Image (cartoon, rainbow, N blue to C red; front, side):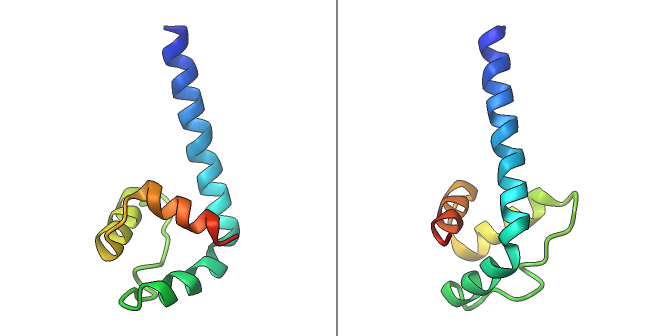
Length: 78
């Protein structure tokens, strides 16, 4: 049970960190995403609070990358 809790909290912390990190750099990253994937529109890149799954699903569909791949790629942008 303790191990499961540690894994859960680690996952929760990573999710929170990702949200905060992405929100902080989102305007910069939007332009770079549009350059790399010309078919992305402003509507595709509009983030609405509480619609995380819809947002990531749309980006995954448009780019052909997984959420983890997208986050890793975005982090690599600086």
